[in-house]
Picture 1 (cartoon, helix red, strand yellow):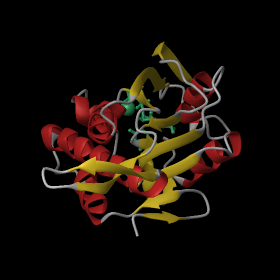
Picture 2 (picture 1 turned 180 degrees about the horizontal axis):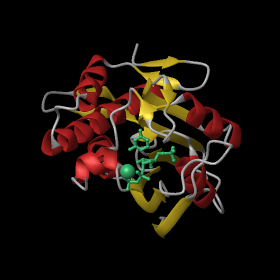
Picture 3 (picture 1 turned 30 degrees about the vertical axis):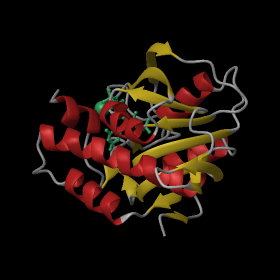
Length: 224
Ligand SMILES: O=P(O)(O)OC[C@H]1O[C@H](OP(=O)(O)OP(=O)(O)O)[C@H](O)[C@@H]1O
Ligand SMILES: O=c1cc[nH]c(=O)[nH]1
Ligand SMILES: [Mg+2]
């Protein structure tokens, strides 16, 4: 039961994913353990994406003893992973263990937290840097960000990624998500498959996911 459909998203339910996320949530988890936990969670999520969302094909192989039939995952060379700086960096490091030959894109996107949320529950997003590979019609694009809160960042990132690309498949992968963010991204990009390890309860008045795990970027990079 690795991926379970919900109304707003599909849940990655692997026991190790839930275990790792629970450790990340703890306020006792310090920087190094936090970063390693995100790497581990990214790896598990990558394997689950392959298991739940990709097909295999039969191939003939020759063992040292005889010819037999084996299986290969189809389309592993047609994967693009977008790293949403900065909190996604360790998460993507793990994801790349499952997709070592993925093309990689980087988008530096940050919420202007001093501006606060507007009446629609959105943050202004600053994009400082983007470097994207060519995205073809054969590609599966995985946009990875451990936190999906209001969805402001993800919608802005998707606007950039899809401005002149029409990939075969679009996956938005998060560790922790909140209902308003899933709703916003789902409405703006109905073609996206939203995958997450946990749909948390709500956002607080500062746009933080509750119970959440706090500020993932600050915890991984020790900036606060
Ligand atoms: O759904 P949203 O309300 O947009 O919030 C989610 C975003 O917030 C965090 O990034 P942040 O802006 O803190 O930048 P950082 O990764 O550099 O810490 C997180 O990594 C997401 O990108
Ligand atoms: O709870 C949240 C919301 C946005 N970004 C984070 O890092 N944590
Ligand atoms: Mg942050």
